[in-house]
Amino acid sequence: MGIVGPNGAGKSTLIKAMLGLVAPLTGRSEFFGAPLRRVRQRVGYMPQSTSVDWDFPTTVLDVAMMGTYGRLGWIRRPGAAERARAGEALEQTGIADLAVRQIGELSGGQRQRVFLARALAQDPDLFFMDEPFQGVDAKSQGAIVSVLHRLREAGKTVVIVHHDLATVREYCDHVTLLNGRVIASGPVDEVFTTELIRATYDLGADDPGAAGRDGVSRR
Image (tube, rainbow, N blue to C red; front, side, top):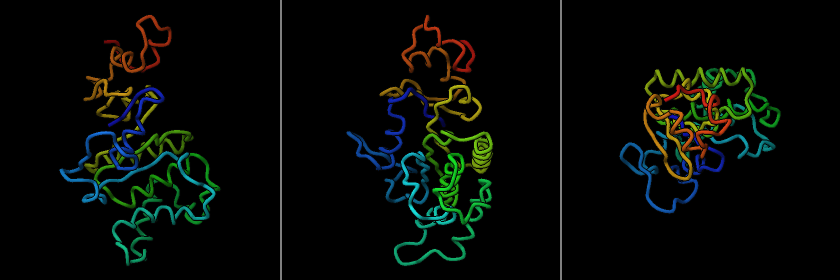
C-alpha cells in the first residue's frame, strides 16, 4: 500500500506514530490484533536515509545484521546464523559485494538498499518503508522494486510512503491519499483518480499542472 500526499501532509509522521517513534495525540496502534510491543518482530521499518548518521563507523554487513537482533534477546550475541541471514539479505538487494564497506562510503541508492537488507534480515510479515525511492539511481530503484515484487509474492504486506505520482499504479495495489487527514483510502483503481488527487494536493480544476502529471486515467 502506498501513502501519498504533498510535502508536510504527515505521511512520515503517520508511520512513526503507528510505530511508537513519536507520540500520537490520540488513539493507539495495533498490529495483528495486538500492541506493537507484543508483535514487534513481525513489523519491520525502513527509515529515510536522511535520518541516519552515516559517519558512524560500521560496515554494511553490520547494519544488515541489526535486523536479526530482535530474535536474540538480551543475552545472545549474533553468530554464524545471523551473519548468514544478513548476507542473504544483502544478496537479495544486490549489494553483497559491499558487505565490508563502511556505510559512509555508500551512494544514496546503496544506502537505501542497506536499510532494505536490514529489514529483510528481520523477516517481518509487515514492512513500513519511508520514501524507499528517494535519491536512488536507476539500478537501485530496480533492485528495490524487484524486492517489493518478491515480498508481495511471498504474501508479505508492504506500506510505503511514496511521492512519485507517475509510479503509484505500478508499485501499489492500494493507496491512502493524505493531507493532514485521510482524503481517501482503498484499491488504487478506485482511489487514485484525478478528482481525489486534486483534492489531496489542493489543485483546482483549472490548475495548469493538475492535468497530466499524475499518471492516472481521467475520471
